[in-house]
Image (cartoon, rainbow, N blue to C red; front, side, top):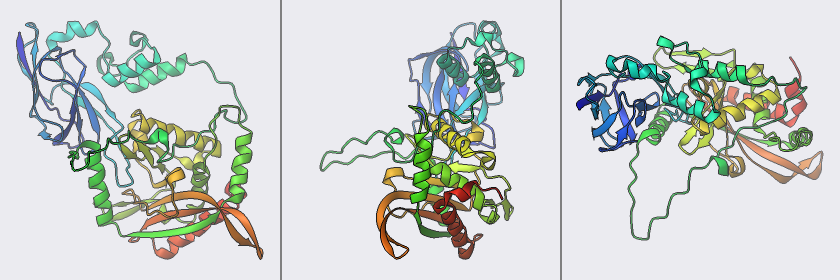
Length: 441
């Protein structure tokens, strides 16, 4: 038998340490090469680290919440006699590790993920590798769930390694062609924060007189850190406006009534997204990033729409890139898709970063007013509250109308109060007269 020391590898993007989120193994367990042994959190991503070799776990270093520097001892394995006794370091070769989507949320809880490298086992295991497909644990899991034999997939990575795009291309080739339709069959909307499907399990009750200590680690620690930074560094200007969405609701119901049985109905969020895209043409200062290090505002021509989504791991912001190029149906579908991917930890890196403005909703829990926190480096966030029927005066007479508040926050350093109010008033006009959302110009 040989003693194999595995050190925390260089996880890329300037990472110097990582926080241990949870061990998947304990001393005495037997692991196979590529089995995930520990999940760690960097400032960029939550990363599943696979074992670089097969063997029995002799010891692990660090408990959940502990921070381990790159190059520090992480795991000691007892391996077969044929495996050279050497130390695995982060400068070794190249297993690819798919980072989970539960990573580095910014204040409204944006998240990012990464593909990083960890140490490979010694060259002596080449014969063993030739009998198995070279790829990451995440791709193996996706292939298993899809019923795909990875031996049939051609790899384009180093030494024929299968990377994500190879699996996606194989799935696309295998899928039957989709017949052309005048409109999509399914019209999904994004999962709204606070809905039962998006909630984390309810916490257990603490007996009277007792206390419970919960260590703040991993994603929850990052959320707390980023929220604090956002509120401390950004002077928020909040603006709330009341909207009469009676006509919008009539249009929404009409479109939903046309859907096939079982299709996902439209929510308000795709309409809000489309209306926001339209008004941002006149308010480019709100579709922007503030680059702190360079001290510049970067305005974007494209709208990369962040959709704040509640997940069991915390609030994340998946992104619909180039939302300005999508129809209502396409936007609804993309919002639902990226939100579901974020909630199930299947989102790609690019789907969890790069938003230029964020929308958020608490759905039925929306209340009357909220004060959403800006998602840096963005400078604006738009939220919707609960819609209620109320008596209002219309043309001198009392009528029952469907009323909903829009709550917004702006970075007051770069968006003047007048411009923020003017943008919300333009948004109000679009949503109260929904036909104008679809008029080109």
